[in-house]
Each structure stands twice: as C-alpha cells, then as structure tokens.
Image (cartoon, rainbow, N blue to C red; front, side, top):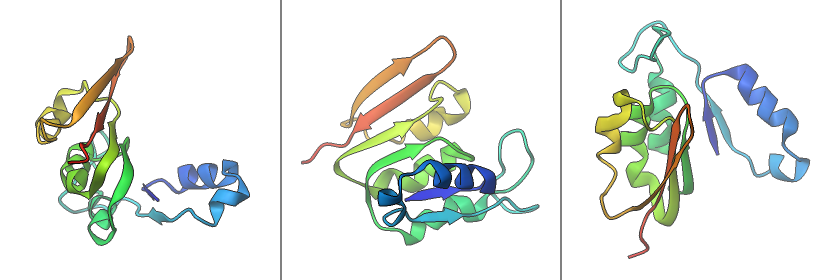
Length: 128
C-alpha cells in the first residue's frame, strides 16, 4: 500500500515494480490543494487528503514515513502498526519532526541509522 501526492513518482514506482507485485499493490494518489490544514514544508501547498487517507485503511506490518507533512503522518499512523511491525521515519533528525517522534511509544525498540546528511530511525513494535 502506498499513499502518494506526486503522480510522476507514483508512475515511476509503478513502472519499476515487477508484474507479480502490481496485482497486490494498492495505491492512493492524493495531490495537494490550495487550502486546508496540513501545509507542506517549503511548498505552501496543503496535503489534508494525503494525510487523512490512512484513516480509512487497516493496520500494517511496515510503515515508512518519507513524504509530506511527516509529523502529521507520524501521529496518524502510530496506531496503525501491527505488533512486531517495523516503523521507519526518514530524516528523523529534523527538529520539525521531534514532537511527533516523541509520541512513538518508548517501549518500541529503535535502531538509528545516521549518515553525514541525515538520520533514519527504524522502530520495532513489541509483540506483547
């Protein structure tokens, strides 16, 4: 399952996925709009539909946050992760995401991957 705001990116992913996965892939394209509550950083566009589409979806074994309105996406999806699942936040070093990252339960095991330019954190939600 993929939630995207950029049609070209969605088409790029679609073009590289092997056919065996295309039948299993669910995607949601929710472009930005000129007004709303969830403003993207740096582009002054709103991503309310993009952020809120997850409300109508079931839970996941893996969640990767690497798009627009990451703080809002983090807060919306924490409870969507299955026990034993992986939760990934790219660019986790950015101060703008700190409050949302602090909402991730403290009992989740975290693995921090730092490079010279950014940090990705992977959490594992306990089974019990």
